[in-house]
Image (cartoon, rainbow, N blue to C red; front, side):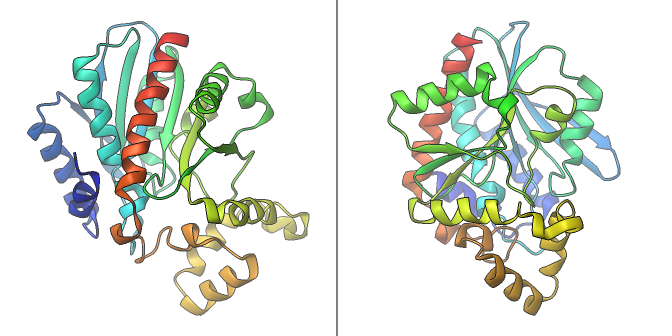
Length: 290
C-alpha cells in the first residue's frame, strides 16, 4: 500500500470532504465500521472499527479533521493510511482483547469528538489509549506527555521495552505545551495509560527538546497555561507568527504544524511504512501483555 498516495487525497480538503474520503476508503477495503454523531459544542462524526471480543479494550486513535487554513497532511492525514494498514492486518489476525481503531472528529476544536466519545462510553474497560499525531516524517519516536505516573504505567513499559528491543530511537516528554491530542479526554477521565506518539526527524530532536523546555520557563508567568491560544491566534497575523517562531526557535516540524505548508511533499513513504509496522508491533505487544 502506497501511503503517501492516500495522504494526497486528503491534503487541502475541507473537513466534510475528508470524512467522506475516509468512509469511502474503508468501504473500498471492505472494513466494517460504525459512525457516531455528536453535538458537543460542534457537530461531527467519529468513525469506529472494532476487532476482537475480549472484555478489555485497547484503543488506537487518530483524527480526520484539519486545522483551518492548514493543508493537513502530516496533521493528521499521515495517520490515516497507518491505521488503515493496521485494520487490514487485524482482519487476518484476530486479537485476544477488544481493539478499537477510532478516527475522531473535531480534534482541532479542543478534542470535541473524543470528549463526546468518553462522555458516551466512559473508560471502564479501556486498558490503553495510543493517539497517533504527525507520523509522516522522521526516524525518532516521541511519546508524550509522559508524567511520572504515566511512566509507571504498564502500557508505557511495554511500548518502551519493545522500542528498545527493536533498536528504535525514542524519547518521552513530560509535556509539550501548546500541543494536544485525543489522549486528553481519556487521561482526564482517569486513564493514565493514555498518551500520544509522534515521529520527529533526527536532526530536529534537540530543537524539539529545547522548544518544549523553553515553553515551560517560569518567565512566562501567567501566560504559561494559555500558550496554546497565543500559538494559534498569533498565526492569524503573519508578522506576529514570524516573531514568535524566531523568539522560541520553533523546529521546522512545528512551524509547518497547523500551517498551509503542512504538505505531503515534506513527508516520507519510508517513515510511513516504518510507522505502519511499528504500530502493528506495538498493538501485538499490548494485546499479549495487558
